[in-house]
Length: 344
Image (cartoon, rainbow, N blue to C red):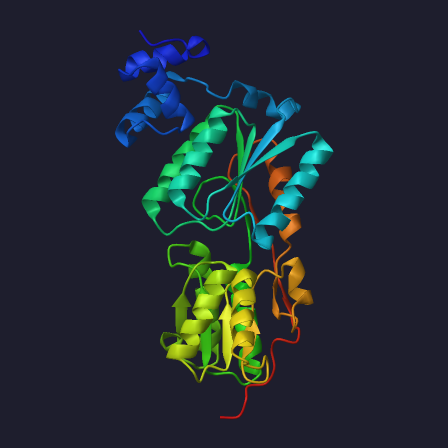
């Protein structure tokens, strides 16, 4: 006979899954020491039995849940710290606490953190950062988040397309097209791109925007000079060095986030390459320091703090019949890091 949903205990899950109580506990908490097949079986049994590992989340709508779990890719990246600031602001207004996790753009770590937050009985999970082009990893995260919402929790994401939950969606493709059109209008044709790994959907979307701008100008996107590195300032330095070696005639570099742009500017400065007289540089995001760089960075502005505020505000509303999508829009901010293409 099936166990009544209201009386399901952890020991019932362990017995049905054929594992010890300790193993069941570790599996549901996402801790080490349990093989992936066993952990998957325990979680499946828990879902089938209706075991609720997060009972406090049921009171979210009434405001009794006090903790929000925020997962970001890179906490020392100003993009994510500004988003976190928006989340923290709304949380403070609502009397909530925020627990921040750092995934390092590793989908395995992110999945582990989702499971940990569920086990910690948070009421809301917000995931900020790019999705992954690995459909299996996305499906695993989607299943965990769906089960969390089934037990009363709430989820919103920022910059993710395929997790089946409320989402705030940065204007990645249109923004990248806009900043590339700016370079084309200045006469640049030998354009290189410094970007993060191909596994990130944000990279895919922003590259698509650049390709659309090139196509619109009658140029071949296949000729675009793309260098992949870490989506960090150090990655920007690495990418800029490779661009200088492989494509020394480049007149403009598109960095697909401001962190990489900062690294690009650092490398060009170290090699006494004048910006923008010899090479123009653009970024994406418009983090707070972008205006204070020398030269000031031309970039695409996203409303990062507002994205964080909107994500938590959405999570605190009743669960909709269908996931909501909130596009951010974007603004091209032209500063001193771009100028006319130098004569050949």
